[in-house]
Length: 326
Image 1 (cartoon, rainbow, N blue to C red):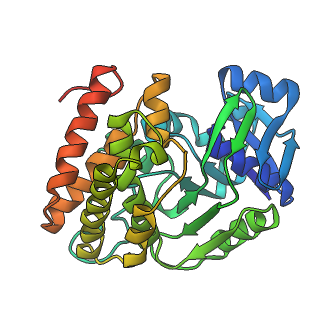
Image 2 (cartoon, rainbow, N blue to C red):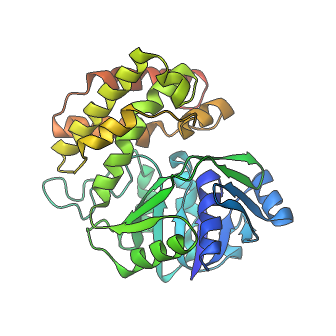
């Protein structure tokens, strides 16, 4: 299977290594120092099960890589317009595109059913670029748990072995294409499954994101150091409860144990949106913070604590020029 990773950052690099180990023919759309290092030295992933070196084809020009069987989009959401503009050369007649990203995805209400079916989320797909370039028919949702970071150009460090990925079709089918991609990842050492309810999986991850990411942006510390203050740990639990209430109101399944798990986290990892703040990169404020609250209003659920924390996190991002005003 020919698989291209569009966005060779921490998550993209980790998945590329796992897919190569699983037997896929892997290529990467990358740029800058990362691209130069991968071309010169290969892609190195330091993980709990060893150091994995692969030599995928890599280019900043998707046309140089050609049509794929599957494309995995692993960029941060501010880069999605660039994906929409550049992805066409990677797409053949049957190419699937899996969006493995944080936050509410652009396709969330497509093939959703119910009163909101087909509702478009402009914040996640400005101008409808992805809808036009990729389309819902090609699209697969993805939720990944993998605490990792790029520690040097071409080098990704995975912080622990608690990794997994869930893939799912927007219409709730467990499709052959999602199952085949999951099988490749499993073969490469990344636990993976195809789900019949990818939106519930998205919310299970979002409950965690919303419980810790705004607090960590505001504290400037990773989860362990932020949660060392019992007041902030209690606040994280309240945020998780509010996020779960939104998910339930939208008809999604998020077990209470998800709240218990995120409220007891004790890992040093810095959420990716805090890493972006520190490195001066555009932040995923819209899809990770703002859109969940938009859906809360749609569902008629009050989220007073999240409203406050997200408003403050937006101010922090704007103060660094990483999120536009208004």
